[in-house]
Image (tube, rainbow, N blue to C red):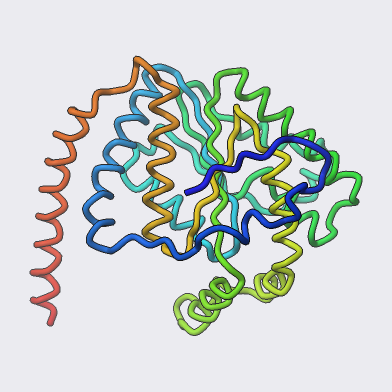
Length: 288
């Protein structure tokens, strides 16, 4: 895991668009270790969700990154054990015609969480600085102005008490191509890869430059980026959960629930999972 530490400035990266390329994308987590830590992390997330609800602490968790980098899997893992009443999921795509007739951040203001809620974004307002910029869907003047719009937007939310947690899931061009080919070869999954996905893959370097600018310029104390090396999905998921847990614990302060309660609940949860796995194994053996 790496948290960007850039400073705000004009829309160009003073580091020459090298930060992402210098990450260690070989970081891994074994299946055994992942299965050991996941129940505890998810249980801790449940307790923190409840504490945020009780203390009216709102939060935003947004996922950006490459196609096939694992944004959807991250959302699924994050929400798997949460109370669905405490969060709202917002999958973001390009703006629709009626949204384009309004100020561009209007549709995102509608998704701002209520007190105590968590808003989860599978892509976000950063679509303007990535896809809309690279694909030429908006004039250069507009995407350049979006840097300041986003900084002001996030500062306003943070000043109102919202905890903002931003992730960028990074994989190499070669890894993205490998994942595309694997999905395309699966008859049940091939629908997920479109010609638009392949077209964006061909523009990997252009998206890389746009992502470097985005991470550098929109980094802020009140809304920091966490860049996760996502070649290993298990590593990425564990780091994602740990980052959110750390941020919410820091935000809750004295209102953070004790870990002892989470540990006891985790033990009971582990027993339930083991029992369910045992039943699944019996059903599989019966079917065989």
